[in-house]
Length: 153
Image 1 (tube, rainbow, N blue to C red):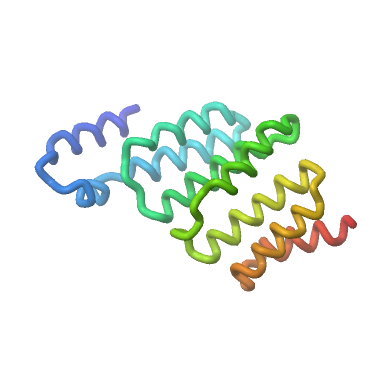
Image 2: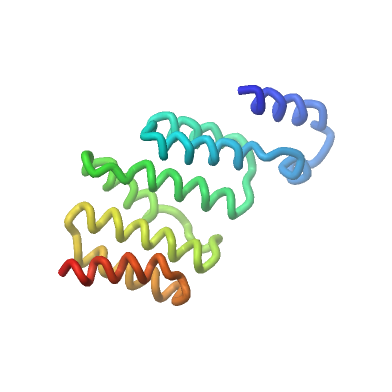
């Protein structure tokens, strides 16, 4: 809360400046994403999603947008809820991935494969892992996840 208050104070004092210049003044998206990651790792998925939803009013660079999307997908990776995992798959499927680097796109398709595999769709997971590897052949996590699926067959 204190950081949010400080970011709002800085933003209100520099209203004469351009919006893009203000993004360099503070790290509000990074703070919210980091808080969400910490909450998720402690099993507080609702707090994590709430923290991520606080980011809507700020402009973000591509790396912050990727981190936010990745954290949202990881929050939806709940083995106890098919609905949430399906929501994670839909989130990736409806996102315009053209802004991301190939390694970031590969990670998102890898996560899509993880969710599809958990939902029991091994052939769809195989396609997602395959696409992840095609997007960035040097991304080892995609290869590892795909290898794990193939060895489980």
